[in-house]
Length: 149
Ligand SMILES: [Ca+2]
Ligand SMILES: [Ca+2]
Image (tube, helix red, strand yellow):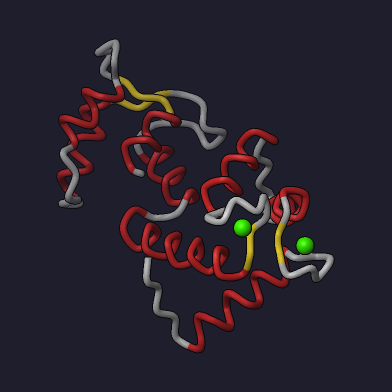
C-alpha cells in the first residue's frame, strides 16, 4: 500500500510512535503497545494485543516498526473519516438505546432507520442479516461494531 504522508502527518506519526516506543528501540513491542493503550484507558486482552500487532506487522518481526505504525495511523484516519472512531461507535450505540458500558441491545429497526438517515453507503439489510443470526431483531455492541467496521 502506497501511503503518502505530508510533513505534518509524518510528524504526528513520529510523536505518537515515540509515545509508544518507551525504550527508544525504534520498534513497538506488545508490552509497549499495552502500556500506551492503557494510558488511553484502553485495556485489550493479550490475545487482542497479539492480533493488533500481527495485523500491522508486515515483516513478521513481532514488533511494529515506524513505517508499519504510520500505515496504521493512516488507515485508522481513513476509517475514522468513514465510520467514526470507537468512541463514536459507542456514542451511536448509546444513542440507539444501548448502554455506555457496551451492554444492552439495540433494535435493528432503529439501526436500519439511522443508517439510512445518514445515507451511509452500507448494505444495512444484508449486514443486519449477517450479524443478527437468530433474527431476534436486536444487536449487541459487538455485533453493532461489526456492522460499522
Ligand atoms: Ca521499543
Ligand atoms: Ca515488523
